[in-house]
Length: 106
Length: 121
Image (spheres, each protein chain N blue to C red):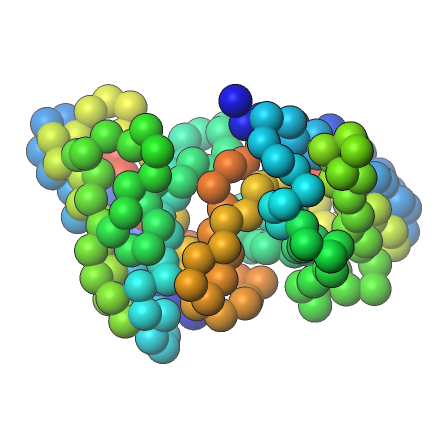
C-alpha cells in the first residue's frame, strides 16, 4: 500500500514543495512519480526514485529508497499546480499508486 | 513521436459490453508491453490489465478478471480492451499506457488522453 502526504499542499508560486510517499513494505528504488493536471492524463516525471524522465525540468527531483520517498519541486511555476501520484513497481499490484497529493496555489 | 490514442468509450447499461481501442504509433510497438489503467473518484487509479510485448501474455486485476479481455494487433500498433458484463462500478476514465520495464516491474512512460466509460441504466 502506498500512502501519500499531505493530501493537499498549498504553496505560493516561486516557493518549494515537498511531497511524501510511503510504502507499507520496501520497494527498493522501484518508484515512479506522475503529474496529473485537471482533465489530462498522468505524465511521468521520475522513475527509479530519482531519475527524471525525458523533458522534465530539473526543478523536479526525487529521492528516497525502501519505504520513504520524496518529490521536491523547487521554485514552483504556475504549470506545476496539479495532482502528483507515486507508483511502486517492485511487485505487481492492481493498486500500485498512492492516493495523490494536490499542490494548490496558496 | 510516441502517441497513445484511446477510443470507444460510451454510455452502456449494466450487463452490457463495450470494446475500447488504443492506437500507439511512433515506436516499435511489438516490443513493448501495454496496459489499461482506469480512474474514478471513488477508487482512484487502478491498473486493470497488461499485455506483454514479447509473447502476448495477459494479466488482469481481480476486479475485471473473467469479464475483460485485453488483446493486441501488432500490425496496427493497437491494443484492445473487450469489456463484458459491465457493472456500475466499472464507470471510469480508461487510460491506455505504454509500459517500461525496469528492475522488478513496469512503470508507465506514455499515456493516452483517456476515454470515458459510463455504466448506468
